[in-house]
Image (cartoon, rainbow over all chains, first blue to last red):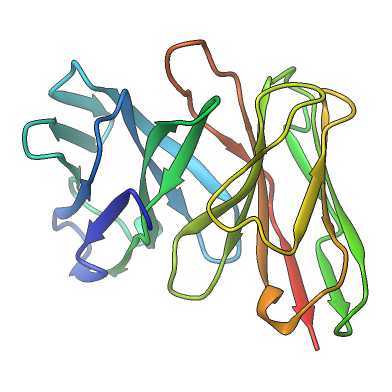
Length: 112
Length: 115
């Protein structure tokens, strides 16, 4: 079973609007990461937030983490057509070494 | 700096055939991973390695084998391909510390079709 689950599964917005995606996970984590995947490409790392952090910013991205609720959110402000992609959260799990487990992702479509 | 390189990019197999996917990274990363991605789903971990000469099972290891003979290479083998193994395969690597995992660097993927 997957550790992280994103919500919504798909999101369609107009250019200039903000996009919010949520991720819930099941077990304790050391960090949580967000990745973007453009169609037909590999995943690209966006941001990492550690379990002792509550909020982190990177350009137009804002990530929050609530460990008490086992949830995280990714906010993309002033979206652009180029932000159209799938976004995945990923959490770490330790089993003889750290491995990274991904959720099913949110497909974001930004209309120009 | 090439990063993570996967070969081949595309492959079509017949049921029962075998093949090996090659992943190479030039970042001196300790950890390497093989994931598969199916339509509408996230990435599922097949096998991973925490260092040269080590391998471990992920979420969906059945039907696959791996080897990490050299630190920079991680091979994924299918001994007897099945249609259920039709998928896009991604290799990734990371520089992981001893207490947590760090960001992954991904290859561009291999589209595998098993007929």
